[in-house]
Length: 346
Length: 178
Image (cartoon, rainbow over all chains, first blue to last red; front, side, top):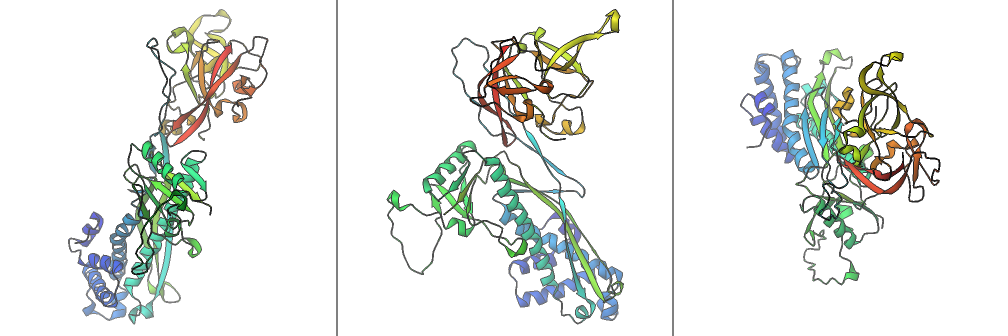
């Protein structure tokens, strides 16, 4: 059984079959599954609205206020069922996602993670120079993001619109946008925070420099071993240096090219890409991130409950029905953990 | 407001342990921590000089001032923003409210200050390492050692104060004349 949020389970009133099917169809779409899901959707609408399709003409049923409400409430719940499953794997390495109420902002206290200067003493002084560190607060105000789509009444009645595709694309769009914003927050924050320190490096790829940075991150993160992460293209630069005298035997069986999976104990992890504005990929080709996943996550996200609105076909002059999905979210780099960023210039 | 107010650490000062080197002051304008002030009158009832309180009226020290005190109030807010934020650079002393003052002992006391304590936020360098008091009681780094008894500091070195995930550059100064 899929893991659904308590809100979805509550909305489903115990019968989560449709939402589990929607979740499965999102991850393993098929034509047969889509048809089943489409029928299940209408059954769920009947159940939630209490208005049977058998008792009236399709047009009258579709425009019934209770049916309309139920349809979009179910769409919302379906999106809520799917979103966590697509967000968590993508964000897990560097993201701490927190749910806040509508109108709330998130305040996170970040503790310092630096070492004190150690002085030598001579057993004759009560104190030495006093040092001080402070926590800092980071405020994240979720920003509203909107998607408005529409369906034509005639196409709905003719059953040409596939509700499965509709949900999938809304979820995918939100997920990609959230991931894109989170990655932007990661790169911007990491670049700013590490500027002028040994946690940042720009230059031609050098394995020793990368390993040294990983060692540094490990030391400052209470010896939690970091991973080296990046886009597939960026990780293609992580190769043994011929001048260091490596020797290996490589099997050409199958003709595949794999990424280096491990560099002297530091795992190499490929991050999932996402599409940002203008269909560009959000993860850069030239940046490696050195991150300790089990330490305080680098990027904090605030997400609040989604809202939607829609109208009746006959309220639009062109006999269409609008559906607006709005989600509030925001991301910011805020972490007590240390991380490195290696910008490859060759 | 922003987190651009001055920050001071009385890193090695006699005022830790000597009550007489600490007192309360009241200024007519807002003042950051790390600003140097001169003591005016005590809280008295005008010309009769009946003491109504042992706090002093203070003004930001000018560049010719001698016998200065530095503002070093615990960074707990007088406004909602100051109160919410742990970052000490959000803190400043509000006009008319008591602030904590420390006297610095020449040749002995050392303070650690960030860029917010300097005029225009300009920190000293390894060559601009003589620090005097400039406009508004803030510090100015230069190369000339005052010879007329004016307050000045020498640069001991550079350090950092971590505030959350950010390290703020600081300078450790030793007061040479006061």
